[in-house]
Length: 281
Ligand code: DHB
Ligand code: FE
Image (cartoon, rainbow, N blue to C red; front, side):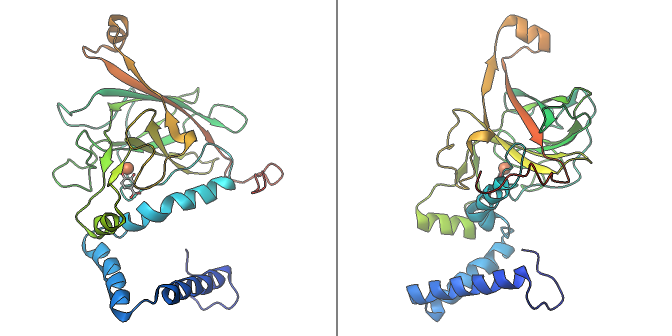
């Protein structure tokens, strides 16, 4: 919620804040929240900041709902949660695109292949993909210590046909930090701490709306029980194994590798009012 700094009288933000206050007070009455419980709850929020989880706690519980709401009102492929681990300013890669990685980076080779098109099916050249993912241990650079800055984070562009290919590694299912306040809340709820394996991407082009996506691997573990409840049908793609000698030769590889294909559709930056999607559709 973007809270304006000046005082406002009848703004939508004010209406939302008043509604939020009403909902929370009704909740307190319903559950007869004592002062002790109230303080325990505020302490959880204080602890998120102490433990660097100020985004994690809310993202796990609420971010997917906000992307669902947004997707009802936009064209193009569905948006997905950003999660707490996006870092702007990843290196601009040069074609042929290979994710920045350590010598001997663990994990099976993966080619992330796809296209970026507009809502009429016309390829978009020079669209930027800003991709980030966990390593084979399920750890993100810039977030977890001892991983080189920008490891498995990079920006690339579609070619003249709106196509891209990025060589990287297959990420594993990801266990969110469980020793802080977010983990304590999940433990009380009796939930596990896993997200299914995924690749993150932000897509940008001056003439289109920026979008945040996340691609999951068909058949992967935790697709049905994602701790962040963020998997949606339109975001799951098939992970294909390639192990024939001909394929390996063509890619210059000695071990089997995987491909995943996803075709992104970007909505125009200025919505076409006539064609705009509505809730009723
Ligand atoms: C969350 C999302 C992620 O993509 C991730 O890697 C970790 C946590 C989240 O929603 O909390
Ligand atoms: Fe993630």
